Image (cartoon, rainbow, N blue to C red; front, side, top):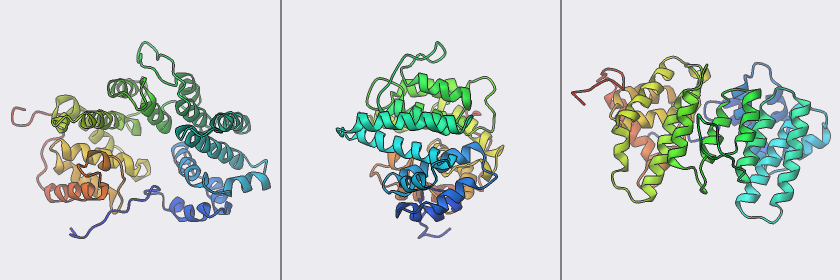
Length: 331
């Protein structure tokens, strides 16, 4: 255990192939991006996560614009043009830019074009959902989850790709009537997803309630609740740690995202199970994610908070007790 350990907080996480090309995309070149997205062997989750991060980077350059102009019939170019248009439109509306509505309409048109060119691909539907959330489209949810949110777009996505990870996380961030997600609504939405019929025990959405707990923590912290940290010691939180631990022990690196492991590691440490968090930090290797560490830190320093929790967990790994969720010492 090195005292000077510094986590690699790179948004690509474990995806080294993606990390290698982001600089090229940022400077306006699309060739490696085109090759990466055309490579065989990518499942839907990997494709979704790659196009999302590529769009965030490409929105500030002309890489995708050039790609779409030079290869207008390339399905991946069409997909990425829609992704980038959505990213730019959502940034515009978030900044109250005067061109936001125009950009939003153009992004919606490109999403429709992408859906037509790549039937069954969830990415255009993720774009529609992002637009609906960004432009504050809200209707009441179903009886199983009666919270306001961009449900029309979410249902369209669910029909194409049930239990899409990015889609559920976008909904989690959009439910409620305020500018940010409502803690109660976020927790209800997360519970409805993990209770969905047929949701695989190996789905990363098994961790969605841990994200909802962070939403609740952020709300309580913003309202100066000095006891907010105790929420990680409740029976409900322990049950979600158990769910997350079962997911972790049933999956492998091919199923993991750094941000998911980061949320699980934090929950285990905050809930008094640093001995189990040891294995999660080992799985993370040199990587870390800004979330949730920046949110739970008293100073907002994600690296400092991550490193402190990691040190605690790695020193506790030999003191393994029963899995989370079971009674400990009468608790």
